[in-house]
Length: 382
Image 1 (cartoon, rainbow, N blue to C red):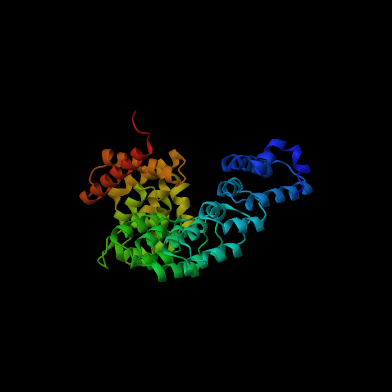
Image 2: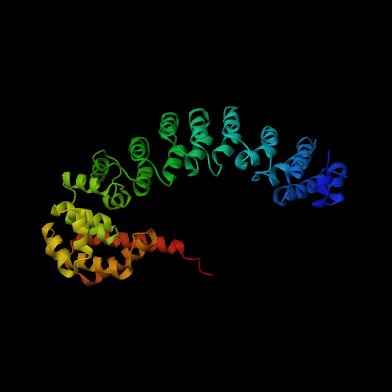
């Protein structure tokens, strides 16, 4: 083995310790140091070839500690040759798992071969990688074991396509661990949320409704308890809706786009929902409604409000909410919404009289919920 090119980067003692160390621990320490140099030092093509030879020696070492030092130190390195990465991925779990979980040297074909080997712990390592291609996810969801499918489902870096979602629900739709992992994803297609509704518990349904958009008609039915399941808050669904126009149209068709719901949406900071609701109720294009709400001064909001047929007693609440939007430069971000909601609800509760008891109870409950969220975000008292 040629090591001459490496001697400018490594001491003679490091290489001697790797080859002739007094024990496994000593050789593993030398392997770790050499691997750090291989990963970080600017090496020429010839030096990289020498480095590959040195890594092969480590990968063939009889001592598990030496091979593990190689795997752990270079698990994220692009300088680990694919051939060596595959060799390490077939080694003992203590050596294979770091490589399977992180190594960029493994191809999708390499990963799929491991998934099809059927070993759950290795499938889980692959399913939890920072990014998992749709092709690998399809094999995990169609052939992998339940723990691996659950890990992939909760991994936002795992790319699920329709086939993967379908396989997951067909194989593990009644497995709470898997369905909970799907609910925990940052986003779900609407049709997947709809399928989950019939499979999950009421508590899980509540989390699904808060975190993901449901089809408008289904949201209405669930809010009314039409399927004898836990009801959901249409205001929360307004915040999830990707197609706000369709959402408010569906609410209107079902007779649910009430003044009460629009006020609740305003108080919870869902300004887009309020704009589209006013447009729908008034029969005015959204672009014109937006201008009347935000750019036409005092008279614009009142005009669109009256045309929408909303009760005059609630107009001061709308006026206060829109004024606060402009005062805060509100952008509907999550933190902005919580801050906006708290301030507006407090203002409504202290300054405006005559709200129905149902509305007061709702706003008080939401204010309490916002306070609990804030309390969780604050550092614990010393």
